[in-house]
Figure 1 (cartoon, rainbow, N blue to C red):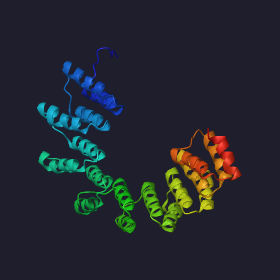
Figure 2: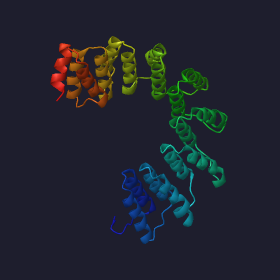
Figure 3: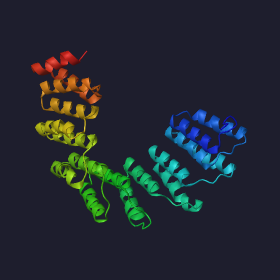
Figure 4: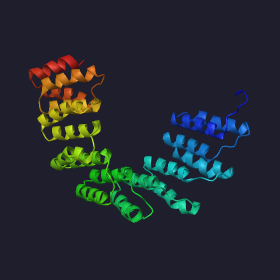
Length: 321
């Protein structure tokens, strides 16, 4: 087949715009669109959505809005729900939730119906800005009562995380029970969200119960779930339980990452287990991981306290410049 005369079509150019946008190369994305127009190609809604997404990834949401309100309307290109979802997500990420809500309320006038992603983005935006009262009201009035809306694990995870972050732990548990009654099957992300929320709000035993019962639900904890429980044990002074759980990870084909190591090393410091901290630091470095800022500061705190524990002094001598 002779391919020398085959020219890129709009779809191909749109993919290129999307790729440049995701890499933050917005000027190159704009150049592609200009090149399309010069060649007599007509950018469509997919092309401009890709450009808008690129702007939003750079935090330039107002420029993305200008693409919709100026360029697309001028060229007679009708926006779709993805166009608005990009903008709504962009404004929520910039913590401009009221602007996102304005766009959400504009959808019926544009003949568009919000998706579960649209609702979830607004819900998350409210929680991100600390407006938990409005978040809970939005969920109950706009989502729970919407018969056309099917809640998924992603949406429920946003709600559970937001409730736990604002110390509404028992409300989160109540909603979790509602999820189960409605037939929704929670994934490991849902359980991790609850385990983290419960442990950070003083309900370690409830968190432990959820964690221990994961196999009965047909789920395996991932590295994030293990790390949350290890951190919870360390925080409550249960260092032996934390260490035991850490050791069990490899046996369960789940390997600790840099966050897991740093959490347990800080647990060692907190419990004055300096020799064990040294062993873990060597192991962590052998895996190509390094100490994070919180772990490094514990070395410095030890220096300032002038603690004379020989194991701590040996650690400081070996690992501090």
